[in-house]
Image 1 (cartoon, rainbow, N blue to C red):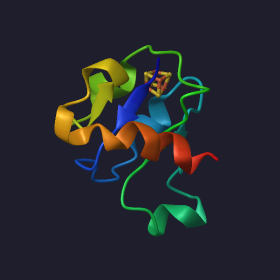
Image 2 (image 1 turned 60 degrees about the vertical axis):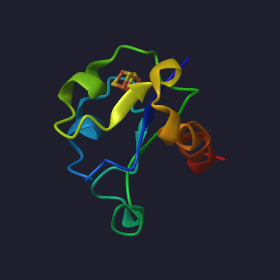
Image 3 (image 1 turned 135 degrees about the vertical axis):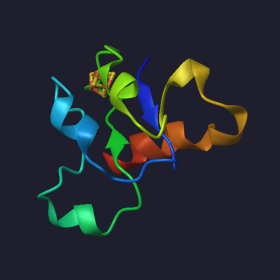
Length: 83
Ligand code: SF4
């Protein structure tokens, strides 16, 4: 299982800085930070701690099994960023 970032993300990078496994990308200093519309969680590196979801002021992050139906596509979109 992993957490998933959805399009409610405003790229404040709070979660990126706080993730203990560096599962969230891009970081604010990456060149890619200016070109993506949101950040993404690597499902292979996420350990399901939930810290990012608790910190997100936009409530943009969900456990994959609690994704709203209209956000289901973001599970694949998050994983695809790292492929
Ligand atoms: S749930 Fe924890 S490990 Fe997974 S992306 Fe969020 S902060 Fe990182």
